Image (cartoon, rainbow, N blue to C red; front, side, top):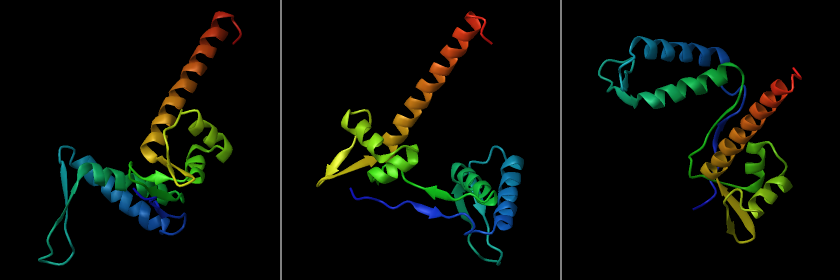
Length: 152
């Protein structure tokens, strides 16, 4: 498996008004056709064959357009993509040395390509979900303790 560069749209690369207009049209269609699994996109010229897209893909496109309309960049990445330690650290919003500590202790699986570590995107997201759940539980425990001690 090779390192894959994510497909990205930087902020401002797509006109925000165009993105907002397209997002509204897609959301309106999805709202008015709730049971439709496949979305048929027809061309403007007579005789053009309709493009058929799965509903989940159209929903994901609407989400991406929402982000672009708000001036944010968007990156699409397959779950099996492998990231460098720099890319993985950036996604977790941690320093590279901290990430390498997580890799070395086995908290996040990785593999070596020569001397370089590679982290699968899906492994990184599994760690993030687990870590987020642990933090939420710790916050809930802290709230419960403060209520028990009448510290609120």
